[in-house]
Image (cartoon, rainbow, N blue to C red; front, side):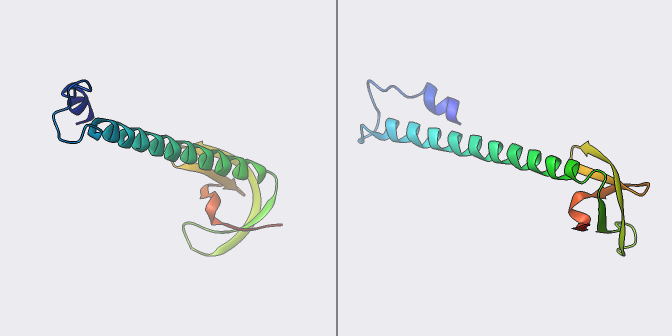
Length: 106
């Protein structure tokens, strides 16, 4: 839609009664682009923060909610795997535990 709009615009000969409509539309498109860039940057920052937090747990004893039983358990974080859905922990040989399942670090 944006490309069609821009291809059909002639800033030297506007087709509407408002000569500033082209500038206004361009400013709106720029604003949307900046908001999209900000959202992507924020998502990247949040992902990096989550990864750093999970890596900081390596070697620590944690309390966590077991994803299969729902019971509270504790153990030592042995490794961190970074996947497309975020970091997962291996605690006492049990892999695939989400970092968000950790309730306490001791």
